[in-house]
Structures are given as structure tokens and as C-alpha cells.
Image (cartoon, rainbow, N blue to C red; front, side, top):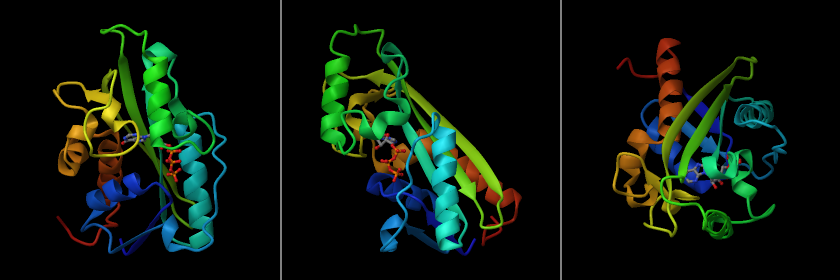
Length: 203
Ligand code: ITT
């Protein structure tokens, strides 16, 4: 594929997605490459709705095939919250630090063994011709009572990955990109590109 717009303003996401797509797409651009990229209002009730909305607006605005990622953390003990509100858990313009502090607070009375959670990622691919596809990934883990690790972004320091002794923020980019919710969704998207013979190389 020659050109793809990744409709995100999240630097952590673009870093991971660009590494995953390396070699398959000649040119990957993102919202930051455009002065007046539209701000999509994420008012959907599901990751699927929000991902589609972002990808549709990006494809319309750029005239390019567009990929959007809507993702978040679902915590069983919080009835699935923050879910689609993950980016604004602690308020409309809250950053990672405020969101993480609120997560620690909300989980402080949740005992060990009841701290199950999952990261979910839905990737929408929309072409200017109107073709639309959705790809999903999910990884389960436990919410930690305090932050561990410096890598990744968002809730990574508070997410102990099931089957690992480490938080998501203690994994390298390569390790996270082998197992994460995003890696699974982008992996399914890459398979689709291969099936449709939309990739450059034949491998
Ligand atoms: P865009 O809409 O511009 O892509 P955003 O950060 O607003 O950026 P979302 O609405 O999809 O994206 O919100 C996702 C939030 O979920 C993100 O801000 C993180 O707080 C969290 N999140 C998603 N994937 C994550 C990951 O891999 N590690 C840690 N936190 C993650």
C-alpha cells in the first residue's frame, strides 16, 4: 500500500502502529502531519462506533485510505469502566497521570484476585471509496495498586499482563508489539491487506 493516514493524535499509538506497519505501507501519516486535521467528536457507545467515525472523517478529509484506533481499558470490578471513556476518565482534557491516579483510587479497595481487566483495541479501516472493515484485539491482565515501569503510555504502568511477571510499561516496544491488543488488531488488518493483495511486497 502506498499511503495510509492513521487518524490519531495519540503519540503512543502512532509509535506502536508505525512500528507494526513498517515495510507494508510506503508512507504512513498521522493527524499531526496536517495543520487542520478534523477533531472527531467521540460520542459513540462502543469502540467500534468511535473507530469508524474517526476513520471515516479522516478518509473524507485526506482522500486517502484511513486507519483509526479506538481503544481502552475495561476493569471488571468497575463494571467495565473506564472503557470508551479511557482517555477522559479523570475529565475531558485529563492526561495519563490524572487518569492513572483516578484508576488507583477507584481500585484501592478491590482485593487481590478481583483485579481482572483487559485492554481492548478496535481498528477501523475506511477507504475513500467507502469500503469499511473492523479488526479487534484484546489482552487480559490485573490492575496494580501502584505504577511499575517507564515504557508504553496511558495505563500501561498499572496493567500487569497475564502470564508475565511484568507490567505493560515494563515490556520493550518489541515485546508489547508482539502481544498487545493493538498488535492483535493491526495484525488482523495486515492479514487483510495481504489477502486483498494491497501490500507492496509479496512476503
Ligand atoms: P485518538 O482518539 O486521537 O486516537 P486517544 O488517546 O483519545 O487518541 P482513545 O479515544 O482511543 O484515543 O482513548 C484510548 C485511551 O485508552 C488512551 O488515551 C489510553 O488512556 C488508553 N489506552 C489505549 N491503549 C492503550 C495502551 O496500549 N496502553 C495504555 N493505555 C492505553
